[in-house]
Length: 273
Ligand code: C5P
Image 1: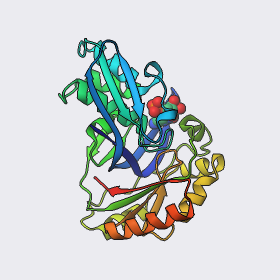
Image 2: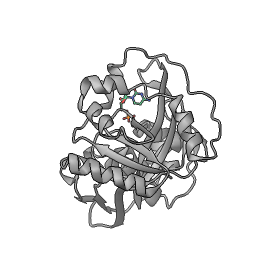
Image 3: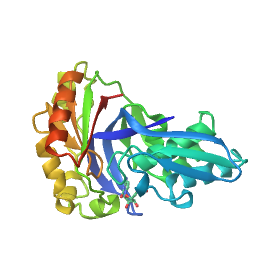
Image 4: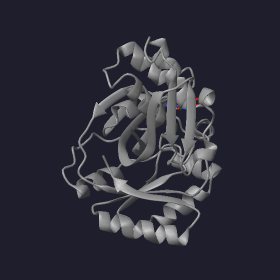
């Protein structure tokens, strides 16, 4: 199962709840780049990990995969021991929802993709605010702290993902955000073409970009490297940035250039889904 990278094409922070969580108005899409998860019977619950970012993956009990397994057990499923194999292709703590996508992927595998109840979705939200959107894994406008999901259609687009090799703490970025109450995104215009999508995105923001750049100035270098694209922005709380293109050719061309200039960065291309 491919646990795909989540991209916040726009992310407006519109308020803060009494418990500290921030209210969002965010346009989310996915890239066909992600972690690979497989499950099988095991003698005991076991996680094996390979892939380029295997080293940063916590052991099962401290991993979102372990939390997801415990959740599904609490629903009375997956009662036998489970062997989980993760190929960790996505950088960790990088604003593209890797840990949430892994949890959502495992929940989908263990529940065989059945529809989850309202209470079960609330449990998923408590596991991680991005888990419900990763379970849906379709382009959507997200509200609340991640629980409201209004699916939208996007015109076809290709993406370059670039991470300058640093992890950024999401709580630290939210904490460093000065203005917690910002205007929501303009009304969704149902863009029919790539150009329409880009025009709309130019009227939106990622409110977490300024605090993330303060904490991790490399985000700015990453955005500079993507500056030749029709549109580039940071995803989530960073540090991964994305650039959008209407052809694979143009996306590949920029990715090759960025990777050559920054051999130690993580750079990938994919289709936006
Ligand atoms: O839910 P998740 O574990 O992904 O969130 C990590 C942290 O990010 C939270 O503890 C909170 O500090 C911050 N956060 C937030 N508002 C959100 C999502 C996350 O303040 N909507």
